Image (cartoon, rainbow, N blue to C red):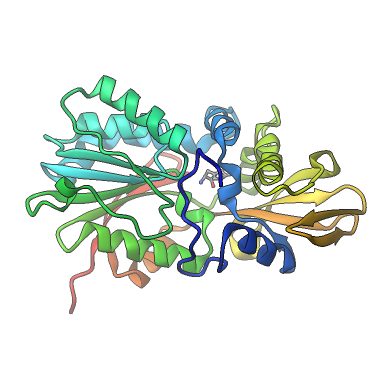
Length: 327
Ligand code: TRP
């Protein structure tokens, strides 16, 4: 297992069952073949991802940052004082920083990340910039159950799960609902979820965001194969695959594929797989939402939308969700 990762070899929810190797095998036996997005995130993948976020075509981060910059005071007021902010999949965190600056006497910040390097880098930076704020990292795969630090469980603390970046859209519907349910459980009855989601919009804008001209998203997508080769001793030839990201209107999502540019084969855990020329591996979904979609999804997880903040073009939204009051 990767020294830099802290994923436990155990399955939850609707994910593929078994060890990492078994999960990869199960995904490759599906049609279309698929590999789980966790394989994007080794140190190189995390670095590429940070660069994607600043690519001119990739409007998501910029837009969410602008919403956060404009509305953090309102968000902070709505969240209230003494919040313990828990962030699954903590990134480098400009948005987080803006939010933490606006919060009234936050109790602690709990970044949760599968990559130990990423987590430690985030923690160091935040400790430097917020010397009075306890930063309590948790190294875990946030799609599985993880233990919270003690302060987060203190009665007076208001637990807020912060899930920006439209990361929810990278999960299939049932997994997204499971994840929201888990967040609701972490927040508890008095807590909240602050969720960033990308909105349905013009197809050309969407496709461009996932096909940046510098090829960063392509490199990021292909990096999953290098990561697999290194970790599981597979023999994927990245040069035989091409990045493809397309808008699928009837599913309202971008799908990321790795397309075989010739007939090819590879061996995983002693099992041989073949791909025809033009056949693809599915690597990720990026669901785009209407506000109605998000409200429905939240409802299915026992959460109600309390507030919505959007940019002037309605490209992206940040929503405050709270546990639904039973009727
Ligand atoms: N959640 C963001 C999105 O869907 C970021 C992201 C996750 C992403 N995986 C990605 C971006 C793969 C590009 C490629 O856009």
